[in-house]
Amino acid sequence: MDLRLKAYGVHLFTATGAVFAMLALLEAVQGDWAMMFLWLVVAFIVDGIDGPLARRYHVKENARTIDGELLDLIIDYLTYVFIPAFALFQSGLLPGWTGWIAIIVITFSSVLYFADTRMKSADNSFQGFPACWNMAAVVIFATQPGFWIILGIVAFLAVAMFTPLKFIHPVRTARWRAVSLPVAFAWTGLAGGAAWMNFDPPQVVTWGLMLTSLYLVSVGIVQQLLPTRR
Image (cartoon, rainbow, N blue to C red; front, top):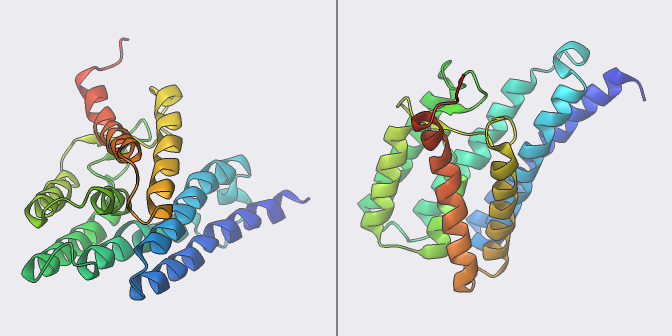
């Protein structure tokens, strides 16, 4: 197959994320949170695959008429931010005014973060929490803490977006990738499993989801505290 066709095929593959976002939103409107998150997990898998494919087929050179980074950001905002925020608001986990505070903070701060030119660091990690509210929402739905704890999580992560704290990209951050990538795969499986079990999983799944989330959120900060030796 011609390399240009393969490159444009990668863009088409990335664009399926918008379809999965719509399917997730339709389930969210119906209040079927399990199916909503399953579609978001599918979109998360697409997002993890399309980057390596884009680099392999050099889409910037071979498919120039479509801006792959812009396409990816649009879909990421839908699947990582907009739909999870709606789910937190509509699910009843955040009653009354707390739901309004959460969706305003999440959507407003995240759109600014997505437009921040300092988002990526030199080692392909993210500077600040990368607005992965879908990951946070899965853990919240699986554990269902009190609304004050949820608000605390939202406030902490929103502030963390605009700090110099580093958060890894499990695929692109080379340091400790041999550990980070399997942990990301495990998180994806656990998140899909929790959603499949209608967010009533056995404790081993819940604890596994919490531990893998803790690793993915904190490992970049640990790397900052333990700089590589020259």
